Length: 336
Ligand code: AMP
Image 1 (cartoon, helix red, strand yellow):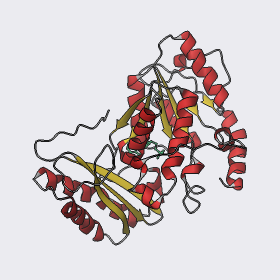
Image 2 (tube, rainbow, N blue to C red):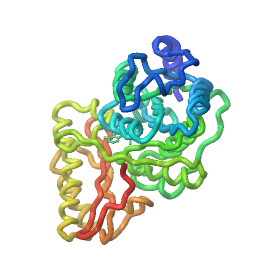
Image 3 (tube, rainbow, N blue to C red):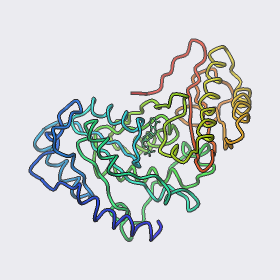
Image 4 (cartoon, helix red, strand yellow):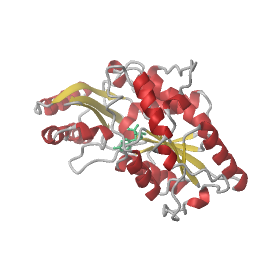
């Protein structure tokens, strides 16, 4: 964690954030937003501390016995992909907590932590409009105080794919999600299929460590040309943006080929690579055909498999994936 970054987050948390903090502990939060997503007029509360989140959720649970609490963990800079998770949570629970935290321990020193796009005011307005009940926007030192010394050791599902170029990434993700789970203690937590390996790691961790939380994985939300929405798309210039669409187009070609009877994972990988290679600004990192649960490579697509790609396009590292379903097969994945 960079000291400068921490200091700037601290300043940020102590000034701008304070103007959003509603310290009215007499309201239970659930009544501040009407079910169905229409804000009642009061601003959605923003917590910056673990103690405040716990107090608010404790009050809610005391006042509304059996209240179903959902958590949507994010790094902010919202787009429709994020909002879709919040809407799903809104529809399936009584109280939606959205965390906004750019988790420093999931970024390698060479990655884009400092440049990661942020716009808290816009995020709070967008989240409030879809009926979020509480934002948790902690400063770095609230999550990683001095002396913090424990991390989740992730297993085989966190090997390969993105882990090949981002060692330690999933350990960082699992650690922050475990902390958020313990802070919020939700009944359900929402993740996007766009980050398929991340969702698989979280599902595995939740089961292995008996969190007792239902993990919901929502479909990838895309731009008109198929590009998966991502906060990092903002890094793309217009030519990069138009070439980036090939990632999904290549996955769609593979999906069509499988539906027409192709089963060879190596032929499918070659097909995807060839389509992507025609776009000189898209620098392919990997193409893998894997089991959607274990993320282990498969040789034949004789049952539903996941095609996953990662590529650098300009400054942006983009990932995407698509289910490949052989004729007669069904996509048995849990997608809410
Ligand atoms: P992030 O803020 O990028 O860490 O993403 C927060 C959550 O939103 C993660 O569970 C992501 O998988 C999910 N997400 C991000 N982009 C999309 C998308 N285009 N469609 C669906 N979910 C998404």
